[in-house]
Image (tube, rainbow, N blue to C red; front, side):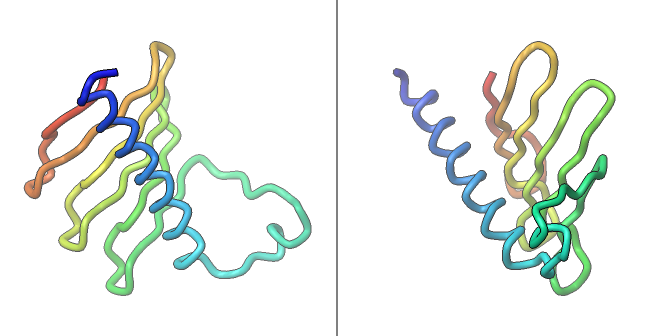
Length: 102
């Protein structure tokens, strides 16, 4: 396994951990979760204390996305899936793509 592949899997694991932690911290308790029911929607945005996007879950026509934003509101990490495969994207401080796989 190459260094880039290892890095990609590490980033994916870290992103999933951060998403789980952020959702548990920022989301209020819901009755639907306590009763074992589903919450159904086509998108979900978790915001910080100032109302800026922190995490965005999006179901698109061709792709599904999870994007985590930094404290300045710029994209930091993205995960996506579509009919041809899955991918990880790492953004630089300006919000531009720095690295992606595949």
